[in-house]
Length: 224
Image 1 (cartoon, rainbow, N blue to C red):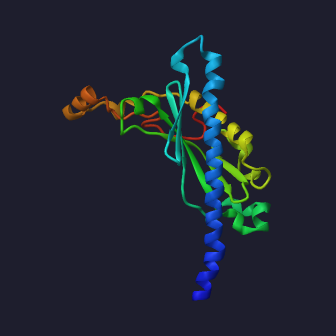
Image 2 (cartoon, rainbow, N blue to C red; image 1 turned 180 degrees about the horizontal axis):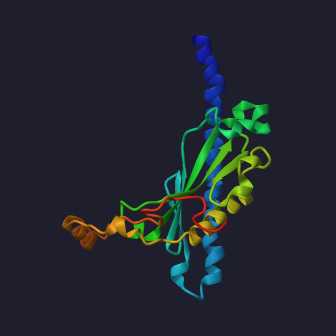
Image 3 (cartoon, rainbow, N blue to C red; image 1 turned 45 degrees about the horizontal axis):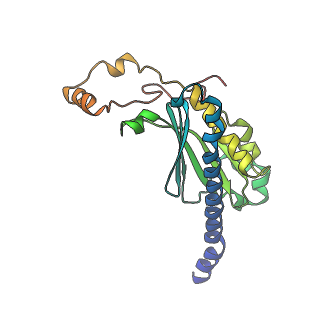
C-alpha cells in the first residue's frame, strides 16, 4: 500500500500539479491578451459612442471580465485538473492513444452575461457558457463552444495554446456574444407576478433576465 501511495504521488499527483501550473500560466497569458483589447478596439470606435467601449477587469487570480458594450464575458479558470470519462470522444484521438496521461487537463470557462446584471446587482440573472478551453501539461488544447469548431477536438495535439490562439478564442467568443440577442421571454413565463416580486422589481430592479430566458439554449441560437 505504501509503495502504491508513493508511486501515485510521484506520477499522478505530480502530473496534476503540472497541469495546474500550465493552466495558470496560460490563464495569465489570457489576461494579458484581454488587457490589450480595450486600447485596440476603443481607438476604432472612439468617435462613435463611448458606451461601446471595451473595459477589462481582473477579479483575483482566477477570474477576469471583459465588458463589451451591453455584454460581459467572464473568464474563469478552474483550479483542479480533470480526466475525461471513458465514453468521451477524446479517447479516439491519436495524440491521446499514444499517451493517455495527456487527457489530464485544466479548464478555462467563458461565460456571457448582460452588463446590466453586474451594474444593477441582479443576482438572479443568467449567464451562458459560450466556450470552455481544455489545456494539458504539454500546452496542447481543444475548445468546446459556440463557433469554436476550428479549435475543436480534432485540433488536440496539433498546436499549442499560445497568445495568438488565445486571441482567436476570445474574439470568437466576443463575436458570438455580440450577435447573441436578448429575446423577449415567452408570454406564458411572464403573465403572473406577485406583489412581492413587483416591489422587488421596482425597488431593486431584480427581475430575472437572460438572453434565452424561457427558451432552450442551443448551438444554433445565431447563424453559424
